[in-house]
Image 1 (cartoon, rainbow, N blue to C red):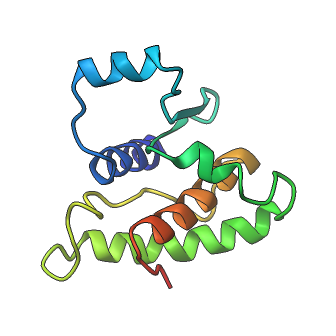
Image 2 (image 1 turned 60 degrees about the vertical axis):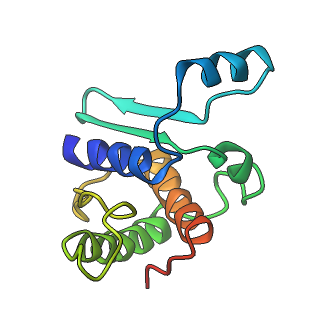
Image 3 (image 1 turned 135 degrees about the vertical axis):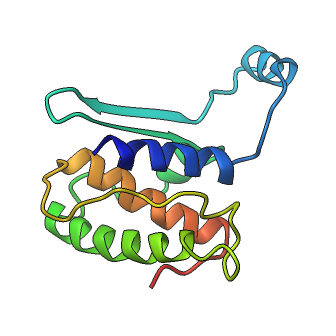
Length: 136
């Protein structure tokens, strides 16, 4: 389960803006900009989701609120999109390895809870829109 979280984190890092100098991050903090980093953790289930993606929070604010989709709906969509994402990550010749650096370890039989499924669901929507990818 930890692999799911680390895979998402590494994917977000690779897909993100790349390396940023500390001087730029200091100037961003001074200007009042907030880093788009989200951490969701549950030690009893041993999972952690970290999404580091510039613009994700501002994009998420434009999406339907929590509770709009049921957890089962998001689990079905996430399972399908994770499967396609993983197939693409294992085929770096056909698909950009910078967009799909590592497979995501997401098991359909595990209840990750509403919050993890909500963030993963929205991350996939964000990923598809931002990088013009279709995970069908």
